[in-house]
Image (cartoon, rainbow, N blue to C red; front, side, top):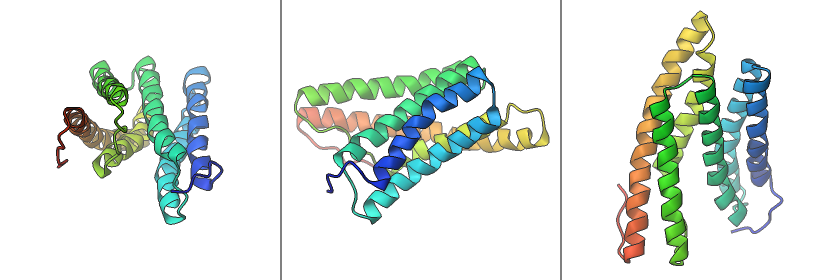
Length: 190
């Protein structure tokens, strides 16, 4: 593992982090949804490319391992809060996704207190985040009263349904793995 903090993959991760307050400003302060969609699209692209480039260029780092999933969670939480304020998705979905992350955060703290490493992000975990990050721009675009908004509604909810299902399934899998590690046994993730 390369320990350099200054790398293109880490810069992409940091760029995604900077997109969070910009997204909030664009959607809540000036309701510039078109620009907010661009910010979400860039956030999704940087989430994909930071990991790909880090592995391809042998620029993985501890910072990237920790910051990437943390920023993903922060991005998702922020988007859900904005979507709650703007009435874009039902409250029960927001509660479900936030509860998943809170439960995993508590399990992570318990693991850390026992000297265990945090969860290793799985392919399905990345796929869940990927689907949600694809769904969010479409769901925001679906608020427009146009044929493009209608198409975005269908695409957004298609990605969202898969993303929510995978997000909950991987949350259960991570939770099982965490408790298994704390008991000293190993569960094979399916």
